[in-house]
Amino acid sequence: MKKELKKNKACFLDRDGVLIEEGNYISSPSDVSIFHETIQALKILRKNGFKIIVITNQGGVAKGYYKEKSILDVHREIDRQLATAKLKIDKYYYCPHHPEGTVKKYSIACRCRKPAPGLIFNAAKDFDIDLSKSFLIGDKISDIEAAQNAGCSAILVKTGHGQEHIGEAETKNIIMTKNILEAVKLFTNSN
Image 1 (cartoon, rainbow, N blue to C red):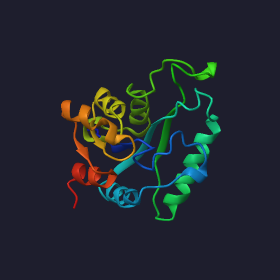
Image 2 (image 1 turned 90 degrees about the vertical axis):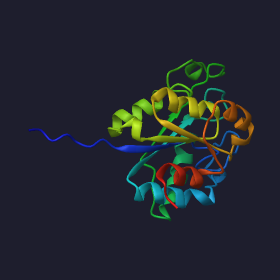
Image 3 (image 1 turned 120 degrees about the horizontal axis):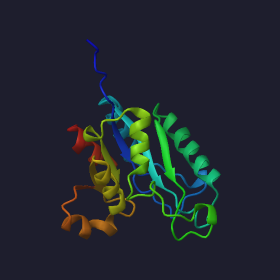
């Protein structure tokens, strides 16, 4: 009898406004400022066996604000800062597209730009993730809709752009918390 392998569970994190402070099209490592609460939140996720995956729209590439290489530089800086706390992101998934972009190569309607669930589905395939046991933390309604479209739970944080979406979140009965740490504690039942 073949033993069934247990699938992984994941916490999908939006990057700007959730994992790091919102900076309006962050494109330089010098702009990276990790929220104070992020470190403790990631430690709780690790302790509870979650994969930690960043899912981020980076339409600034399509709009010509920065090159795709800048996204990778920012991710390396996040990794560097997290390493000081012996933490790491399992993988970053990003969408450089925007349907109203000015750089032709990236100016498309795609299946990876949130609220589309493409990036989440890619991560689920790569890491053998059970989406029903996973959750996403975002600061925009499009983040929450991407999670819902993928079949996983979602929590809206009030950091980043979160304050702008409170009214809509309330009318749609979306779970909201103060920040990434409160969201992680809520989903994992940790104190």
